[in-house]
Image (cartoon, rainbow, N blue to C red; front, side, top):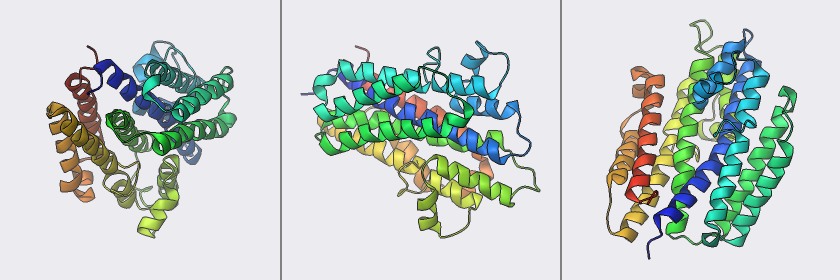
Length: 315
């Protein structure tokens, strides 16, 4: 029997917000690492992180200046920011409680533990020098939830709706982290290919836990074209756009067979997946990396809306 739309929505959004909590930590990590490698850093760098996180407009409603401490607090623990780490883990737990009977005991308990742990740590402001430890804590807690999920959940439509939420969010995040490099460090011609430029690309890889796997895959120094290829088109990299699109399409294929139909979301997912197989990294760069990422984010958001409509999330 097909899941009720409300249950499917709870599963989808639970895993979107779990992924969002981790992804926000990764975006802040990328901004922090890039700011430390930029000798001419200023307030506009943290503004760039807000732009890439899609949170600039909300931030401007509360703050006039882009000072690092205010930006960090807004992205990590501000309850007025629905995408902050604190808000995301709160929302994930609320959705998890709503669909608790669809989850294994291990998944619910690790989610609840992550909520309690992060709630306690984020009661007080996070200073800039504390950021690495807090970021690691967020990544560790969300990894525990993911481990319980993959280790104990039956591979049925419950699994597929969770997977859809996770990979829709992950694809959005990888595109935004790549855009942090674009916004924060639009390189001058003299810096392209320099040791500083290589260090900045290494920081991007580190922020998505991909530094070592990049070296395994390319056996080379950090070259922009290969980093971009790795994070967009490499189907063996679990945080790449191509890998995320393939996982989304796979889950939608399973759901289409279970429900006996496919819909607009299925066709949009197929188009996104084909985009990752029919373009080379050179073509993407020549046409404009920023433009490619921006269009991908728009299309990925449309896919999420179509999934909600196709499976009656709000009925």
